[in-house]
Image (cartoon, rainbow, N blue to C red; front, top):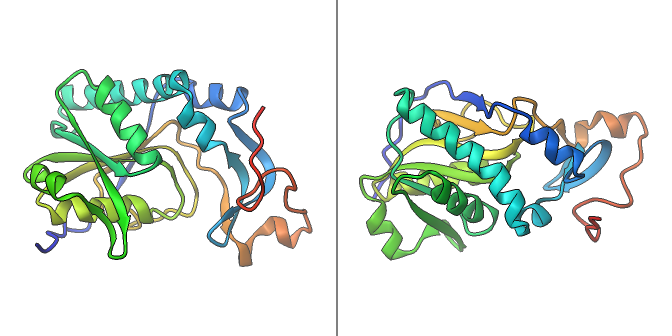
Length: 223
């Protein structure tokens, strides 16, 4: 089945009202003002402890519930179409998608795409169920937008309609079209995490050493 590509349109960047993201920073789940190797050839001034956040049921509730309420209010105000399902990659995206489905307080389904030699794919049973569904794609941190874009493309390939995307945080590398022309992206706050390609990293140019405590190739220590 071929993808029904949407006409190019401007993606709206939205955020959850309140101080949820600030609370996460205060608890130490996000470290800013440093120099970190986040993998993929990218450096950032912020490090996100994704795994401890995803493993803490209370944190999941505190982050996903306001996002689900924001989506519900957008539906009520007719700012978007009704959501039938959430979908994410079979790691953090799946966890967030399932939590959003729980807190949506309407009958929504949850699907996950798995990594295969052909890219991200849904299981055959999910593929059939996605037909005609209005889907919000979920992720944890949007860096280049590739994962959100691939899941969105696969939803469309299976006959679903992508009505938006959500993630806890978004890095500054994401530009127009990187997310596959999703109508909107909802994050915890409007501020992006400053991130650069390794070759153009201003912190490297300034001679700021990489963190020897946090980084993609270092054991993650969260206290």
